[in-house]
Length: 201
Image (tube, rainbow, N blue to C red):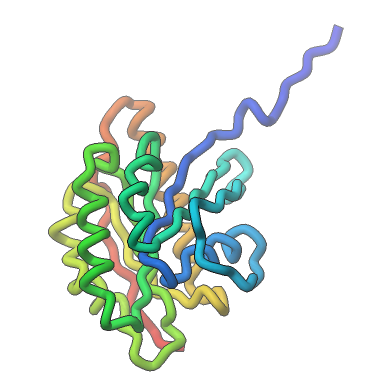
């Protein structure tokens, strides 16, 4: 009698939440992650979800949740069992950066997001007025509000895909660290705090 085994049983699952204000580029980021192509998107009402294999034995289920003001009160319903947070910022939208910062900090204060690693995507780097990674880091006070977790600020352009591979790689790294820590078992505390220098396209 033969012995069989399924590779599916060895695939680890992780839940990734993609948040940010409306028009920050969340859905464009999601579909670039998944298909490596640009799709014309409309404002998300509710959520979009895609499963992405970043490595042979790791599958990320990525939830892109609508960012309109009337929908933000529902964000908390998606927090449970989150393994990683991707927060997308329109780096060129100076009028709404303070609002985005406020929402970001509100999310981090929720107990369900405690210790969850964060990759902040400083999007729209193709625009001349966009803040670079260092400026976004200071603006969002990352060192203070993310002192209890792994975090990374990645400059990117969702339209062209520049910087997204690096961002997704960092998400994968943090999630793997988190899973390893939980298996030990330890909490998913701060391990690496690094910042990528922005370079305009």
